[in-house]
Length: 124
Image (cartoon, rainbow, N blue to C red; front, side, top):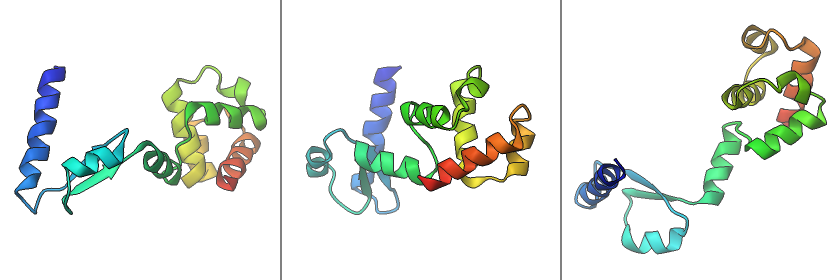
């Protein structure tokens, strides 16, 4: 499967070299090295730093930061049994959603807990 995926990615990148209607985004550990290979307006290069900035704009916190936030606002025990994805959804929801939306998705958490989470997430 890895070979097929690599071949697919290579094909997409190669196809974009000759066509202006195709846009390819490439993640790179070393963006400067990749930019030398893929130049032109049809390519976007994303590195770890820009990826993290994008995540923050979208309300995502890496697990270590998310768990530290839960600990700081005394929510660790309340969410301890939640799957990781649910914790992410909770934080993103607190960033963009309303108390009503969060209560519907997370009924075991109190309004006060949700409000303190919303306040903490939106301060960051």
